[in-house]
Image 1 (cartoon, helix red, strand yellow):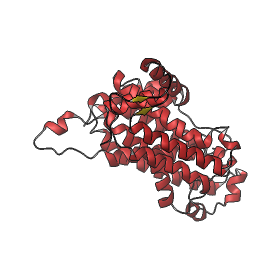
Image 2: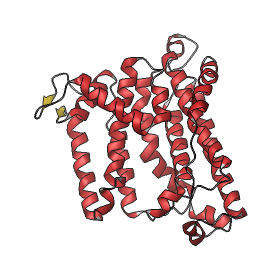
Image 3: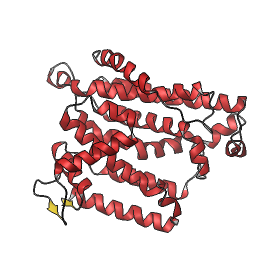
Amino acid sequence: MSKIPRAAKLAGELPTLESAYESCRLETAQWAKTFYLGTLLMPPVKRQAIWAIYVWCRRTDELMDSPEAQKLSVEELAARLDRWEQKIRALFNGVVVDGLDLVMADTIEKFPQELQPYLDMIEGQRMDLQKHRYHGFDDLELYCYRVAGTVGLMTQDVMGIDPAYTSSPWSHTPNTSEAAVALGIANQLTNILRDVGEDRNRGRIYIPQEDLARFNYTEDDLMAGLLNDNWRELMAFQLQRAREWFARSEVGVRWLAPDARWPVWTSLRLYRRILNGIENVNYDVFTNRAFVPKIGKLMDLPWSYLVAQVR
């Protein structure tokens, strides 16, 4: 298993570890409010690690989707991804060049993990260079794994497993990877459904072409933002699929260490409620962005706590 050595090679002047983690906290709080709320329920060492991983993933996403990236050619974007891949490979070999590298090096030292999920996420971004349509769900599932399921693999060792499972002679250590990936895929499917309007403006349609045909809703209809019964039935089908992936992840959440179960349940339950928000706007994701109101988030905390006590 790859691990950052304590004596990581440093390149240039770096911020302090404390200030670098604070930068990650602020960025997570700004851009991932629901997710950030869940992290605040974790012990400090775990929440800092999650903030670092979140920011690394956000940086990866920005290589393709930032306003600056929209002005670049395919060749320039590909070169960006190549440089980013070289940078994460160097990090896993102990080379630290900036504040994000610093917190990632500290995170990977405390919670050793594999390089492959990071490379897979970059590969998911490469898919967006050329692939703007998905024939069937199998194709989309691979994309969702790469850009989001990988996050589950990056964070599962930070969360940890309940010692009760590993100390009992009658139990086997559970494989949390499948559930971790399922939660990432569920989250990404939710993002896709929430952001249909935004993605079409970029020329991207993530809803599988087979599903469009099944519900007799054309690509031209989607680009025009047509709201009709076909669209609502199509979206109801997509929401049900996302909920099934959330359900697949739930068993794994019950295996997590006690100090991680409540925050993960909170994030899962709140993110899943975005699907309710889509229903509440009658599936009009062309002119509305579904979200969970702050009061709804706060009211869910005690319920998520109770669910987290059940194993």
